[in-house]
Amino acid sequence: MNLMLPDSGLIFWMTIIFAIVFFVLAKFGFPIITGMVEKRNKRISDALESARAAEEALAGLQQEHERLLAQTRAEQTRLLQETAAERDRMIAAAQEQARAEAQKIMDDARKRIREEQDAAMKEVRNEVAAISLAIAEKVIRKELSGDTAQKEYAERLADEI
Image 1 (cartoon, rainbow, N blue to C red):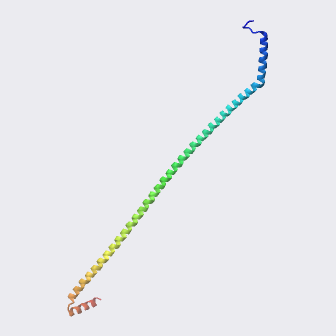
Image 2 (image 1 turned 60 degrees about the horizontal axis):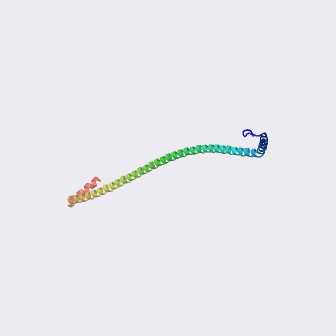
Image 3 (image 1 turned 60 degrees about the vertical axis):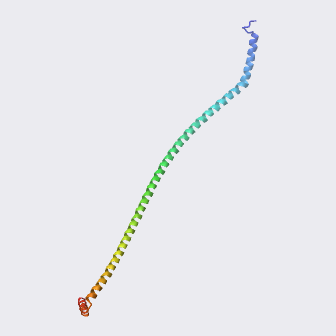
């Protein structure tokens, strides 16, 4: 018996046991193992497909985000322009109102000055008239102190009329 060379009976029985084990494994073990490998491959493929879909969805969301951001910026710019235009309009309206009120105050002041001036002129005329009458009265009394002077003056006035 040589240790390096197996006996022919041993080879025969080893071959039969190997065939039985191989048949049992081929019949029951390999389908389960291949089924599990296929399930795992399918799960990996599904996960890769889901990852691709998620990546595409993320890209779509990124584009949507950029579009919304651009739209928001445009809206912000439009609102700022509208606000600036409204501010300018309000300032212009306030300036116009201030000009109108200043003009009204100036007109009222001019009117009051004119009225005061007219009243002062009227008062001066009245005083001048009163003084003139007083002077005329004194002059006439002095000139008409006698009866003959009064008659001559009355005749002269009658002739003038």
